[in-house]
Length: 200
Image 1 (tube, rainbow, N blue to C red):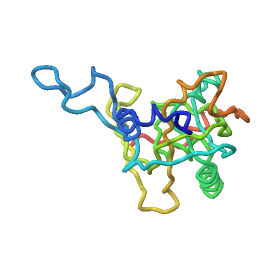
Image 2 (image 1 turned 90 degrees about the vertical axis):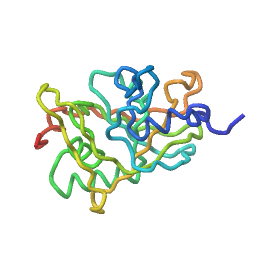
Image 3 (image 1 turned 180 degrees about the horizontal axis):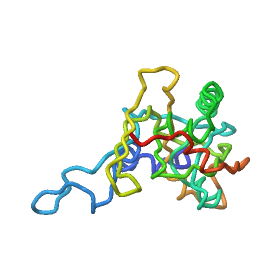
């Protein structure tokens, strides 16, 4: 038995595809004349994800939708390690912006994907495997229905280079033996997370 609570989910080939931003929906896949999938649509995600280990007592953070419960937010895959979250907070303070907007700019999360109205701080309870990498550029349909949102990555600028974590399988870990424990839930104003966000 693996020492990592989510080993099976991590080693599923689909977890790496999701970490790289692939949309595994068959309805949006590129298929041949026989219906065989040739490629999946892809946007966002990570550039060159690498295997990363998380061990008990490490602190991680996740932004989520205000429409979800904190527990539901905590079962999502995208997280930040404590040191990267502290880098994000420093960036927000340096530029005088709200932390939700700083997350959008550094992690490349348009409002179409989340209102970033909840921030969960959690502690790792059981060892986990994650994919770790830098954000890739995003091109996604605008919520207004007109055009697309484009967010090119700026990893060449050190202050904007933030590694993210994709932890597969958190929703599959038994509720009686959770892999992470929620320490604190911060309620954020979704409007602050969009203040200054420009559609160019």
